[in-house]
Length: 475
Image (cartoon, rainbow, N blue to C red; front, side, top):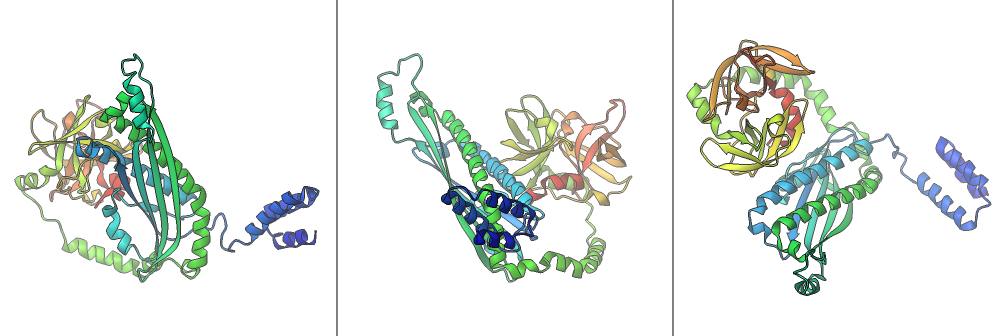
């Protein structure tokens, strides 16, 4: 009883622990084993570092780098046209996995934003992992998938051979996936030295059953891969979020307490250079006035990055925003489409997939194979004055590019979103195409026509608004 009273005295400042101690005293008639278990739990809690509290999160920038290495045993999918489908699928799933983890960690351990690095291949983040960002955290997650038929599949094939003429094939084949993940968390100090805080391994396994005929079809194998990938990634995300936050808090305060107790580098720098930064920006704006382009030169420069969007239901326009294989179009053009094809001016087409969408802005971000695609340069819509000359380019006509020279009439608000109103009515196919300034930079995205068809005007979403939605995908 003296030990219990001592524990109660140590934690009497915490109301919920104090209440629990009273409960422990009241239940001292429990079996000895139960009392020891409860006592061990309380001693563990009070032994945690003093800085670990529910609202004491890490006030540092953080980056999440995820690599995925899929191993498809006894499969020829990587040598077929399905390779492009799987590439797009893995890109989208890894991004969703990353954003889900980022959201969970921001709520529990990271104060501020946790930026997810784009791409799922190891080489996509290799340079950042080597150099990092000073005075920040790097969460490196390496995933390895192994897919394939189960060990009993050869015997199942022999059994199926004798029953292959049955009206309903027997599902004797098992297709399995094993996901292995290693999470390593680093703190990168101001000298760009990486301090490893913790390392943890996770695994998740799932399987599906199918018939002999299912096992022979590549399309069915792709469906299995999709299902198993989503299940195992969801399970691994749950495991990581259940363990990582508290471990990261404890290890961080133990290993780098001095760094975390001082003002973050970013805040110190911003306090020291805020004024000089503004003055440099003003000087730079005066010195680096964009060079105006003649219309033919502008079209020649930007047209390779502008494409026509073709779906089974509608057509529209779009443009490349990153040479990593990301593009933008209007959401209403591709929403609900089973197949999205992008057709470029110089011929050829690419398949694409929607990876992000914002119904409020009517914008969709597409992922496509990065085949030497140069993105358009993004400008600043805040620098555009009413009456400024602009150029709308897209595929508003049935054949070829549509180029419309017009002016900005005014800024209006539509359902809480600021829009640029231009003095020209664009064709339906221009939705998603760029609105360019005189130097060929994107200052808005054409998203809808005027509500009144008789009105000779159209609207575009300012690029400053749109950029917030997809800035993490830019080069």
